[in-house]
Amino acid sequence: MSGIIQILPESLINQIAAGEVVERPASVVKELLENSVDAGASDIQVDILQSGRSSIRVTDNGRGMTKEDLVLAVERHATSKIREYADLIALKSMGFRGEALPSIAAVSRLTILSTPREGLSGHRLEIWGGKKISLEEVGGTAGTTVEVLDLFYNTPARMAFLKSPRVEWNQIQMAFERVALGFPQLRFELIHNGKKIFQLFPAPELLLRLQDLWGSEKINALIPVDLTEDRIRIYGFISPPHCHQNTSRNIAFIVNQRWVRSPLLYPLILRSYAGMIPSGRFPTAVLWMEVPPELIDVNIHPFKQEVRFSQTTWIQTLVGKAIGQSLKSYVPKPEERERRFFPTPWSPAPAQPFLFKESDLPPFLTPLTQKTDSIPWAAENFDISADQKTSMIDRIPDEESPAGREGGFAQLSVLGQVQGTYLVSLTPQGLVLIDQHAAHERVLYERYLSQWQAGGVSSQYLIVPILVELPSGWSIDLETIIPEMAAFGFEIAMAGGNSVWIKSIPAGMSSGQGETALKEILEEMKMGTPPIRPEDFNQSLLKLLACHSAIRAGQALGPEEIKTLLNQLDQVESPSHCPHGRPLWILFSWEEVEG
Image 1 (cartoon, helix red, strand yellow):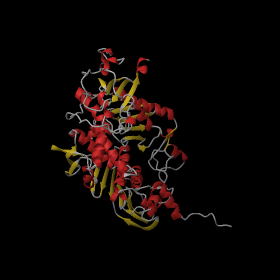
Image 2: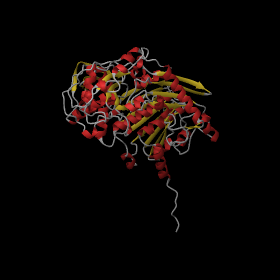
Image 3: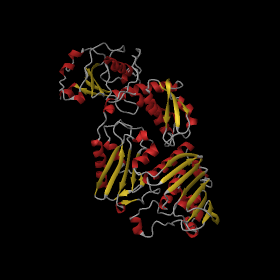
Image 4: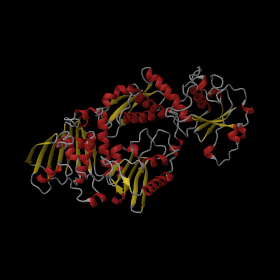
């Protein structure tokens, strides 16, 4: 029997290759931007329609192509970047495989108009589904315009795997930002559905490019990083410990001007901030790295988004050292150390039965049969010297706790706070430390969740609405999510351009907390792949609200505030962990304390 093994048709080969290069509209944007950069362009414009499903057009003022080069450019494995293996080892260009244009052409209606700098005329090439339709001479200015229409029109199965327009547009923005971060000396422009989203002028300083992309508010507090050792330079910016967010989107590595994902470097960032920021929160870190080309391999990933270092341990050591030096040199401003997070006084909650089951009671929440003075340790036994300012315990008078079931959190004998972060309590079983932020976050999360399930988070109107300038790109789809935001306690209205009015915020928040929370919610709603179940996504937003509303580490609490918090903690269903999974308390038995 013969004829089982056959050579695939060229059209099918190109479609298979396209699956490795063209995953979604953002993949097309990335490849075309990199081609423009490699062509020596100083001005690049990206014009998108309907999140890339209808049209993607990239125009540059690069060197352009002759008729002969234009015809070859859409052939597989045709490239101007390398000639031999030695060129691949010392690669300095963004693209090199020669698969982008033919792969894009195989799954779209592709048009390329290119005019060489030294030529008087250019040429226009049109390809549909990998088949050449026309090639004609045209006039035009030096440079190249590539237009991709009806992406995946001939591969409907691929079209079915695309996400919502909001998610696909967010992916395009990220692809654009990543190239723009690698080449701050170039001018970029991004337009979506006729609206100019980004207009980035050449930036003489890296911080200016970050400001144009993310807004001045997010980058004002960043700490510079700069380390050079043995032909390797690591420089950029990281956030101080008190500035963190609910997404890792703003952690970026640009190696030799190429944005990369790095399983090697990413954990170093989180390890450097371990113990400084809450669990589930992420810092901002944008690091540019200049590494000799022979020490890295960029040919290990189909989308060229990962690199391999030949001196792994050395690179890790340098990155960790660079970040560590910057964090150690950072000295917080007084207002950052003393900032208060209680916008309004607390009011004691009415006594209610416990919501958590008797079997779920922490071991120290048993009916109190002993008085504080019969416990082996009492407040008078704490001997703290005057120079131990960071661990000073605020003494609290021994008063009656708010009403609650005997043995609850509200009945604990509280000594005070340690480092303005932990509540110290005495029990017959030992010494209990309660994380005030985690505890308050649990209280607020369950409150917000109950309100949301009942129809919407309670809100409070602002006497004076807040005008918020959003960074470029954030205003996309805002009109469609106004009803969604109302369910989370926010009433917002368009104010023109990239501005919105905040008319109401969740009850109990300060205006500053509400503004920050709204920005993070908008960013969360427009980024990444949504979870399988919509309710999971909504609960993640409620956790974000609770995190922003809760008291912080370093917040000094008065006796009444402590009592109210403990009384409210008696009313939650899960008094052991915060919504992100961090323990609320830890018990040190008397044996552990005395040992």
